[in-house]
Image: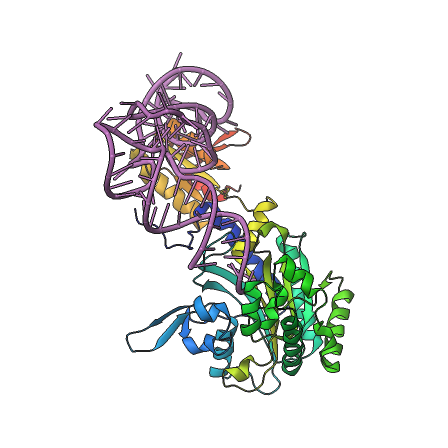
Amino acid sequence: MIQAVKGTKDILPINVKTWQFLEEKFRLITHRFSYNEMRTPIFEKTEVFSRTVGDETDIVNKEMYTFIDKGGESITLRPEQTAAIARAIIQNNLLQDNNLLKVWYFGSYFRYERPQKGRLREFHQFGTECIGSNTPESDAENIILGCELIREIGINNYSLLINSLGNENDRKNYKEKLISYLKSNSLDLSEESIQRLEKNPLRVLDSKDPVDIELLKNAPNIIDTIEDSSLKHFQKVLDYLKNSNINYEINHKLVRGLDYYSDTVFEFQSNELGAQNSFGGGGRYNTLFAQLGGKNIPAIGFAMGIERLIIILESLDKCKDNSNSLDFYIVVSSSEYSNYAFKIADILRKNNYSVYFDLTNKSFKSQFKDANKLNSNYTIIIGENEVNSNSISIKNMKTSEQILIEFNKLEEFKI
RNA sequence: GCGGAGUUAGCUCAGUCGGUAGAGCGUCAGUUUGUGGCACUGAAUGUCGCGGGUUCGAACCCCGUACUUCGCCCCA
């Protein structure tokens, strides 16, 4: 038996309703916030990601599906969407002066990781990007969109964590402070955190090691390092959120894994996800466009993991079942009446009803059982009597009432 | 990349002194052959993840491997 590639999953008919439900919500909520959908290729030149996501991040370092194509070009299956959107915006010149662009996306992303609950090698994300504004209002609106979406999906038990990383300079200063603090205590630091200290010092703040956590209690706080303008910006964002009745939790240890973030960062977390407790996250990325060779364009956005949303919905027993909304099941007493059945099906289908009839030569009785199993609202019974009298028997499966109508009255029948 | 647990019928799982497999649910058929749901009766179904090894004999023991899962790590 050939198995699916490790870390990939089939979405089966029984599960697809939940996906469709989520996709509908994405469209609905983004529409309310006036975001437009955007789609980019599944693969990009490798540098799109290596230049933006960060050379020292694991994503770029060891998790990308990168290959050399037949033309000798280094190609990478997208591990995330933001960088590719930035590339497309620059290339297509979508941002004229002072323009604002609000886009959303939904698609597959690829990272070569060890699979786990809520962590796949091909996974799906929904996300938004608000590009061209550096105002706290744009931060707030983007976060509010995320919260609205989560609410509409039916998830209430989650936390919104928020922090500010300040501007590039602030972060540089903070990194120095943090490193010098941690180095003076490095004997106690976990092996992993010592490595992080070299590569990506901010991530030490994320450590789950109990000793590290204790040590970090007295570490310098990023909020004390960031400049006034960033501080004011952050405060305004918080004010707007409060004003919109958004519950948030300030967490100055929240840093994000991708290098391009600055100022506002945030994360949606749930307890249903095990080790992967975050089901969404984002932040401001004011340097990304410049990193790709464009102008300096401020932007903010977030992404959510669809598989993780579904895990939460499952825990809430809110996944959509696959109950078929079948209107008519046509039961024939013999396959010699199939012509008649096709005619009836054609009329009903052209009137937008869903119609099923047996294609496997089931017995008369089995067809009824089948109709019941498929939860059909009506059955249409076709046998010798109906065909000879050019009529149709229609049975209401809920009430068991059955009527006989003329064939040419079928069009008038309303369920 | 590292550590733990697991893989038996479509699904959930049982199956240890090693003797070529079971339950429940589901599926299918029948219970006066043109009428479903309930009930009853009956039936089908597995290379026991895959590949080696030990043994007269392996679902069970040993080795390898794939995948799943829980953590580390990373991140959505």
